[in-house]
Length: 68
Image (cartoon, rainbow, N blue to C red; front, side, top):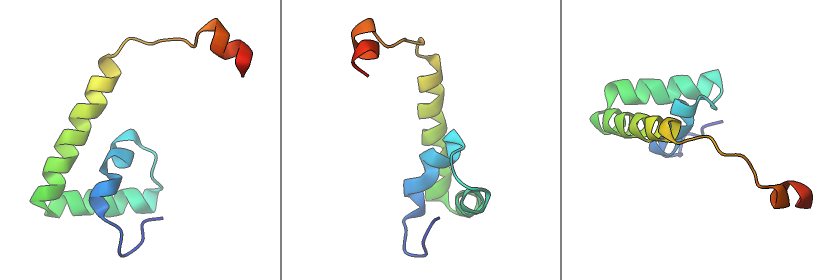
C-alpha cells in the first residue's frame, strides 16, 4: 500500500505492469493525470514496458532447471 510520504513516481512502473492494488493504481493514475512530471514518468514507463515486450522469449537452461 502506498504510504502518504512515498514518492508516487517510484510506483509508475508497477502501475504499467499491472501489479498494484486497485487503490494504489488509482493513486498513481490520478497523480499522473494531474502532474506533468507524472505524465512524463508514465510515458517513459510505457516505453520501457514496450521494449521489454519486444524481447524474444527465453527459457531457463537445463543446468538452472536441474539446480533448482
